[in-house]
Image (cartoon, rainbow, N blue to C red; front, side, top):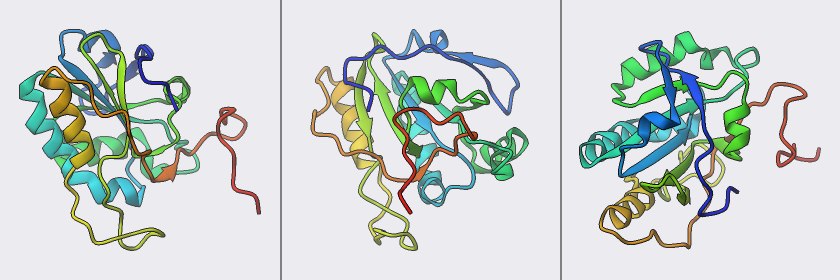
Length: 195
């Protein structure tokens, strides 16, 4: 995992709805930045889809920037193509930029492992939180439950940060589908389960 205090790695990614390029520097005026590695097809992302939009609508007016990044191999997972990303973002009504990391270099720079994977950076763009949205899991998946999707962990971290405190350093890692790396492009920190 990316160590707390790490400066946000730079990026310049195409946004699928507007077509514009979104850069880390665009978020310099923000009080905080939430970077989310998400995609279309993952059942864990589908499970929290509505909460992602609610979170952004609740916190963007408070000066928090949001960006969703899809780094999946679209040859193997065509449902995650930029064209389908655009439809997903529009259908979900997401108010944040949804960007495509075709080279997968941004996911590697952030040591992203799964979808969804969440990072919060402070005003100086230093990492203060990396972990789960909340304790809810899709009921149909291993480890699934019927807990409501609230965004509790992420909201708590943002509330603390916006009130001048540091988020609790006890942070639980996110759980989801692994990022779908292109063959031969897997980072050193990725290991396939042994058969």
